[in-house]
Length: 403
Image (cartoon, rainbow, N blue to C red; front, side, top):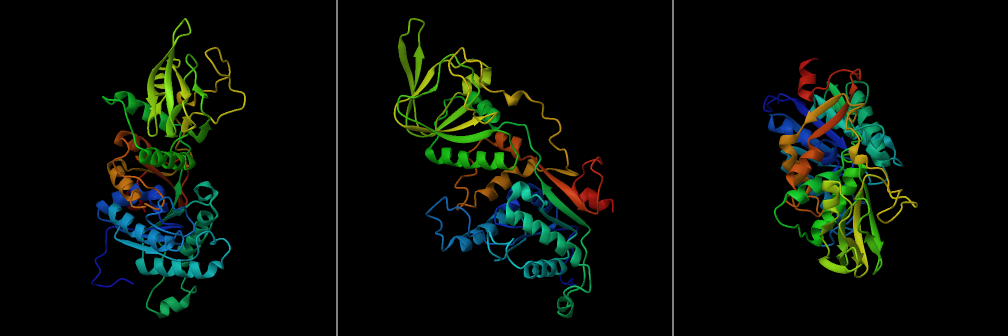
């Protein structure tokens, strides 16, 4: 309820998601941008994320994961400049099975108390079909509309709250980008002055980052992990360059084959090191063989998923299409609102790094140009009031100024 002691911000934004860390991928830059501009921002997570991964055993156990992720949410919001964060406990992985009424009532109470101008949540598809995401989209939308109805949850009005209908409801939207993360990595690798020699921590963080970027549509790379036994030709000299490799474990040798069949070992390649970038950067065939000198596991980034009929060797005819040459137009199709958050990418990555349980990475692990290429824009669909899709894209604050 509004009081005289509480100064009314020029804009109030309420973000409602299912799990801690959803706020970053769905709207992290947008929340940071508007908070920096004077908006009052609140993030609500419906669950503590206790059914999530534990990717750093030094940080949490299954018993403590929910509490730790709730704490990570608070730190993430601090990095983003978000003033308020609420972590509810409605059961990670069980939202769709629970009685929807208690959570709907709780979200309605939060809307009536905070009185936002804008509510952001997942779209009906839950970004990629996650049941909790789909459910929180439905319940947040329901609460958005019920909060303005004085006949719903009247006990809240008796406690001093009053009906409130926010001005806008936005769904986070993830256009399927045709950009390739591999292209950005290749550009960075060939531009740095000395050969990159990463750590196993870097390799693991990049794997998680690449998988998340591909799943949410920030990039269109196929990301997979493959094991190669000792003696396997991972790449062959002369064959087309279509993939970027990062060794996760094991060792490999780069071997140059002369015209007379003589073989020369040129380099040893180990965990945290890339290979294959030169051929991709300059559109040239592979300049050497890369052979596993012991059992080796690689992360592989490629334009397309591997098939069972790709040929090998310099004369191979079936090597897959190079999707990196496809145009990028149309990636915004379906969005009504596009937010330029390029100035807040560092904050977004810093917030992501607070989630040690899910993403054990350091903010400076990756090249900032690559991160800006991936994270500089966030997209939304305005669900209320309806807006024609062909309309121009505006920021949320611009949309509000038009009402």
